[in-house]
Length: 193
Image (tube, rainbow, N blue to C red; front, side):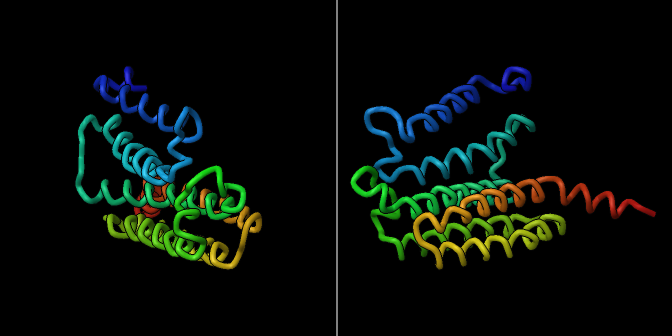
């Protein structure tokens, strides 16, 4: 894709860094996921790099304006939330093996941190909305994020399992609706005579 799109060589380097980050989360002599740095790498690679990098490959320009930067931050925060709820669920089994953020700050603070990730992540999308379709996309997904947060605050251990796919699917739906499907659908509806 990089070669076909005519993107510069450093985009390949960025791709290689993403592959390194994915493999070294749990592999190598000092996996960074075992020392509580997973959140940072997930934010960078699943948020900033994925959104801004995809934009660059398509548009051939770097753009740090708020309409693109805020959704990149939002996607990064929601991706970190996926990792965080997984880490909250696995706190007992991770004890003594990993030092994840929830293990470092405790379950109550991990839930507060999780709420912060979800609320700020969704707010980032609202903040960057420049079209009615994007606001509608955010509004459609908010109830599912609220349902997810309710589950995270009321469930323990393996009872958190359903909260993982709920968050992943809701984040995916938000990204798809926000980035193209809703604007396309509303554009088609508005073009009818």
